[in-house]
Image 1 (cartoon, rainbow, N blue to C red):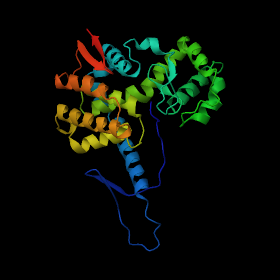
Image 2: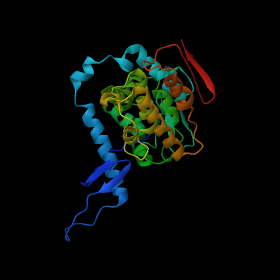
Image 3: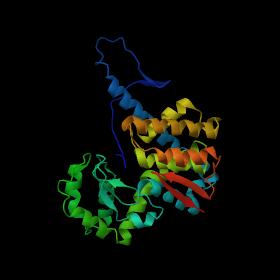
Image 4: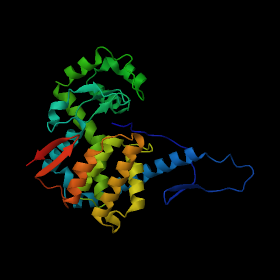
Length: 302
């Protein structure tokens, strides 16, 4: 998974319109030097996340009044199976707690049900939180090394024992529960909640969840919150009177473009032959049965 960036920026007056960032000018000769374009863009990305988080916490009563959607037990299970088909090439997501390998994608070791990565902070956060309640776990000894390699693809301090320790710890029910809790806290719950506030049904909630998993809950150039802002400039969200189909189409366009901008040869089948297929079928409630393809493999849920 991508790094969950929590950055603090100096107050920068920014207007976010038509896909461009504009700095508010000042006539004071004593004013500090104008922020760079890069700083302004970072501030705008932070603003995008802040707006989304404010919306996410704004109306608990509204959320409670809406259908469960993807949070319903059967739909939640379906969502995890769909994500697992793309992250682990299997529908058996419960069989992947102990999975760990370096995919040579610049993110270090990728591990567990949701693809926590040693290079993108979420694996470190998982082990730190787990160690608070289980200080004698097999992974605790690797925390110094995990902190050192965070943000890199390095294995320094992790080899040769870390992968064995992960697999062994994954046999513990407490660690499996910790993976589930971290997944829900960082990815599933925020994505579903915000999708509901944007007026999206179960399919849209899944589209947000999968995007949050792949792109990260951060403010990078291709982070989830930045992608959402771009989509909202292309189409109105249903909560603002827009078409649900048109908005999801715009969001998937934005997300696919971001994937290809980062890696021109990226496999985008988790969008093209999965989410696009459901959208083209008008399956906004994500009803089963479902048939989709990811990385050339066909999956079915009756």
